[in-house]
Length: 199
Image (cartoon, rainbow, N blue to C red; front, side, top):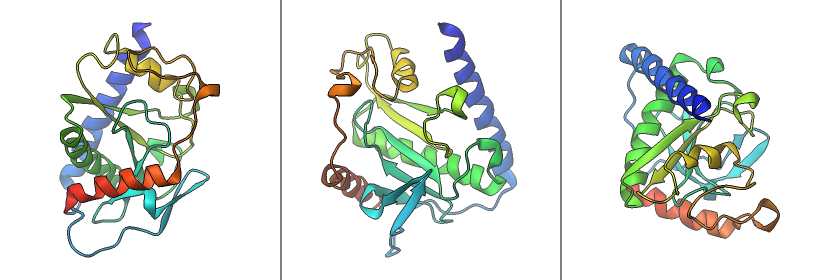
């Protein structure tokens, strides 16, 4: 099933090219968590209210946040989300789109280095038919290491089946009915750990 993977790659590459073109003229915000500015008390992710304990990043413009993942596919799998709840990338303003991709670049580099990854998958499922399970634009960052999946492209199958059904990989991934959500304490601990990357 090589077609959809190539379409995803092409679509994502196209989105990055568009974002790059738009961002060249957009106002540039410093992307740093430095200083005493506090993270938001909570943010919406679709219909879910995400507490501050699970947020580890907010852009200087406050248009983008990053969250730890309740059911990560690989260690360090995080989500980068625009603050405003919109279902599709086409619904983002130019400023939101630029901030989302600039934040994704910064977060991806830090998370990849922190987890000792050699590379990362950056993926967007833009709409229900593309596998989007929460109708709120979000970018998946998945730090990767050689051999973490039997075939490197199997990560796309795992992402497509993000609800947990039959994820083919060398990692032990239980069936959905055998999986449990991480606790709020576990997620808060990871978010706190990741926040320190901006200190």
